[in-house]
Length: 283
Image (cartoon, rainbow, N blue to C red; front, side, top):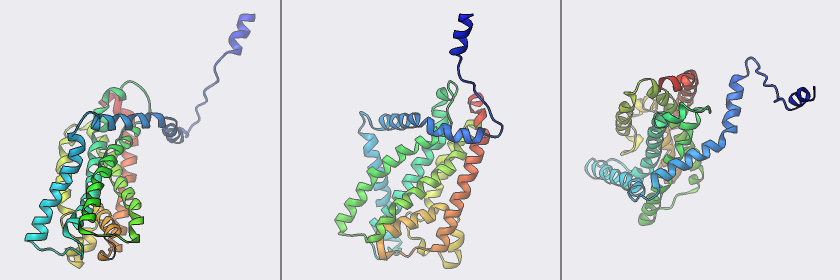
């Protein structure tokens, strides 16, 4: 009798499963697993930069060389307008958000495949993997930002108060990358050839986005249609924040870009959540 009572006294608490509460519990689990998020983010940073020189150097060399090529082609040869700012700064102010977007998109789209063993062994909200991979792209962005500071010092270019809005446009670049990245990450699990499509998308996107030139060169009757590319609004926002009075932000196009980012984010979340339950079986 005593043994029965003891077993009853030490019985574990009952687990009550309520209908319709799974979605709410999922978002609570993301907060409960925040320690895993910190671990994965720190692991990716260590893998990228620990005991390496090329990792940090590549974050500086790649945007610098791209800036030099675009400055020569569009600034010197094509003689496109620079909006009153040195052409090198005009280009690099666009290279920063594009590099942030492209690096984060590459990391998020491959995050599930790179952590296949983890997916098949333990439960955790799978969305933690692509979101934590954003940190590496953001660190690359901070390193590359040093070049922009050096360019501004070289040309003695001082931004005005609009630079205070820069964190908002950094958030928009991250927001655009995670929305599109969640969708591609889920597709990569089911269709492995999508990982070969992502570099092509980024290469194509670099040339149709206003990185090497100002979006003001786009004819006025095409400007609104051109803003369907979400990165147009982000890049124009970066230039508006960094180049001060030299850049006029095209607000109708900017709002269209932001709306499309939100649509992409909602679609990405919904598709990711819909296919998440099959990741461990398919991968």
